[in-house]
Structures are given as structure tokens and as C-alpha cells.
Length: 222
Image (cartoon, rainbow, N blue to C red; front, side):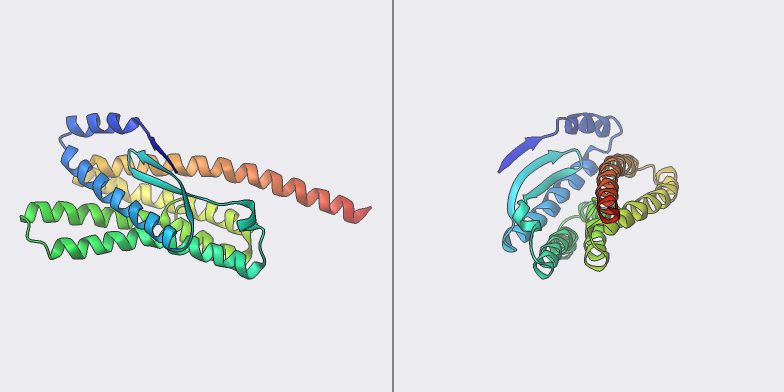
């Protein structure tokens, strides 16, 4: 299993330091790491093999190793793999909910409690948004995959992600203006970066699907 560090994390530390929000950022990163540990533990318990762990400006990113044989299975077993991915995606937000329950039962000062609860609620809210590749997007994509197949699920989740991201950006602009929280602004930027990357991947796959479809139609018309 590989471990990597994205050195942009130090730029974020400097940014939050000068905006006097480094403590909030540190708490969010801490619980984001615990969030990803929930994904990692769930994946291991479900028999999935971790491939890499990367320390990012917004926490850890855990990826699991999948072989061609994992996809090249009968439909029932293929759906079982998708179901495993859904459970792994849900494990992160459930871990944050568990953290909130633990925090509420630990005697700390009110300010520390509020920061920790705020960080976990923020992670739960944004991760459950139906934006791929966030947890909510992964869960929705998995459900769409089982209902409509891989090709349509990727098309649907790409469109849903864009619509959701536009709405979240609009609503978050009010929160950024009134709360003056740079963390929300940074999260929105990262969500757009993630969507743009995923949109490029989707467009490349769509071209391949269309080429395969045309090839099949040509063969059938011969």
C-alpha cells in the first residue's frame, strides 16, 4: 500500500494561519482523516484491498485495488461489488456521526465541543451531497448503476453533480458572506475542481462508449 502527501496542504496551512482560522482548519483535517479511516476500515472488513492513502489539503484519500476480475463477474456478483462500494462510501459520514455522539459525552469546554461538532457536521453535510466523487455521489451512482447500468449511471450522476454543485455554490455564497468562513469557500473551490476532473473523465468514457456503439451498429448492418 502506497502513502503519498500532497504538499499543497502547507499552502492551506499558511492561508488559514493568516486568516486566523488555522485552529478550525486543523480540527476539520483531523476529523476528515478519521472520516477516511471509517472508509478504510469498512473496505477491509468487506474484503477490499487498500491500494493507496494520500494526505490531501482536505484530509486523506483512500483508494482500493480492483482487478479486471472484480468487474468481469456475473450480474448478481457485479451488483454485490457495487453494494460494497456503497457501504464503504456510507462508512465515512457514519464515522462522523459516531464522533459527534462521543464528543457530546466527553467533558470538554463548550468552545472546543462546538468546534468539533461543527467540523463533523460540515464533513457530513458536504460528503453526503450527491456530487461525484463525494460519498453521497458514490452512493447515488452505485444505486443508479444497479438500476440502469454503468453507462447511464455515469451520465446521470455527472448531470446531477453539476446541478447540485451550482445550487450549493449559490447557497454557500450567503454563508461565506455572513459567517465569513474561508473554509466553506475553499471547499466550494475543491468541489468544482473535483467535478471538472470527473467531467473530463466522463467525456472520455462517453466517446469510447459511442465508438463501441457505432462499431456494433456497423457490424449489425453488414
